Image (cartoon, rainbow, N blue to C red; front, side, top):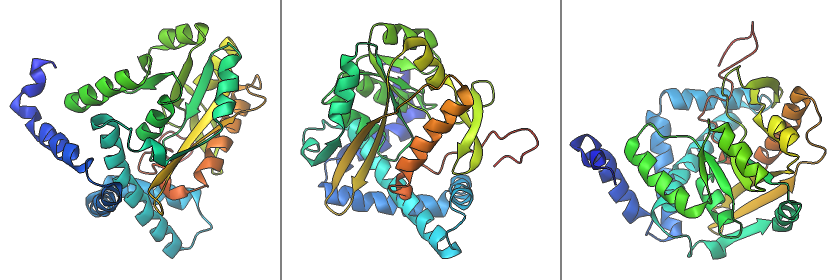
Length: 297
């Protein structure tokens, strides 16, 4: 561990990690309950994030009543609170006790794609069960992952160390050369395709009926490599404290036109979100970048 990380400036983060280390050793049902409490607190003090989530819900679910939107917002934050603990679990504890609680759908789909020998683009999105979902699949398949550095150096150290233990190669998201190189070596690469990365690397395509800046890297990589595209989603079931991981092939992709490809991918993501809208991370600014002349949110 780098010596700089033991600086007193980082002691509050280490204290939180120590608490998380104890929390993830509680029975799962208590972890879920505590996560809901964390989410409720987060909603009350969340300020800007609470406003972002409320606006996203208002934009994407216009047919819901005001009461239904408030109910969904409450569940979004409850889910986000549970996700905090799930993420801590991924980083701080082996997954052996959770794996029997996981239901996989479509493992054969991924296996078929891997056996084609062209590499695989394993595309995901920011569902609440993100780090944990990827870790579940890593227990069955060997694949690489793309990540974004954390602004907190302690969190970055802990999360990166765990990712390196779970996955083959951990690639920083801006390292396109490494991504292309791994695909040419027929590797499977997992990353999220639903971030708003600005105009430079995006095209605008409908997402819940709203023109959203959508990364074009999936379309370009699929075209360059010929790799099949598999979409992965993951959800928790609070009724029996279990999880599911779903894999499906994105057919007839790429189309040869970036906007059309982005439209296809957004439709796939939207369809999965609708399975359980509360388990998507609506707290991030999905509509940060909008077309010229359109209001930003």
